[in-house]
Length: 218
Image (cartoon, rainbow, N blue to C red; front, side):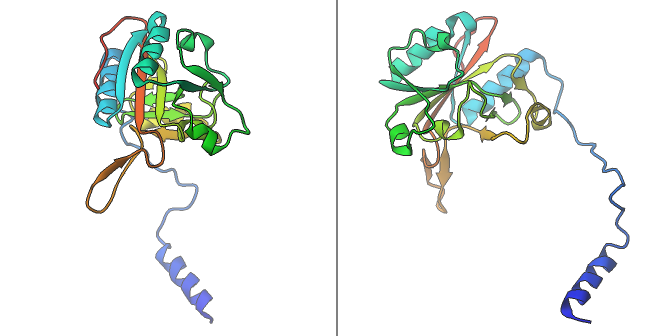
């Protein structure tokens, strides 16, 4: 008996009392923590986004264009990157030069752009996480990683869920998923926080609902 056979024999003996592959796995974990209304779920999302140092705004669909224009102007953005499927009306009042996303754009070219505006696939209230899936209104993954300022629009309530399990049911695992919890940040062994290392230094999230609401947490 060689070493390989001895190791495999030990593995078989250790797994002798383990149920077979056809035995169903119990999945009794909670799908969400607590029973919340749509408004409470949206408030929780805004709270957790702000806790991750994202800047949260709320507006109606009619106010979205001036809201985005104001955000770009406040930052002094002279250029904004636009995914191919983004609704043109969202940037109708923006004064910044609109730069279409091109496959041949280099990282250096993208780095010279001030801001990027995208939609999202889903937003998770319990974790304050925004998920992008590369759809036309979100564009390729790198356009939200290279520019220093990302504005992400979330439609309320249709794109807001309570929990990660609920989000996973809506997402296609074959798509290029990007999970965003606040602006890019990392800490060294001394816990010195540095932002903008592997993504945008500033994340602004616009929660677009049917009813008007005051601007959210900053």
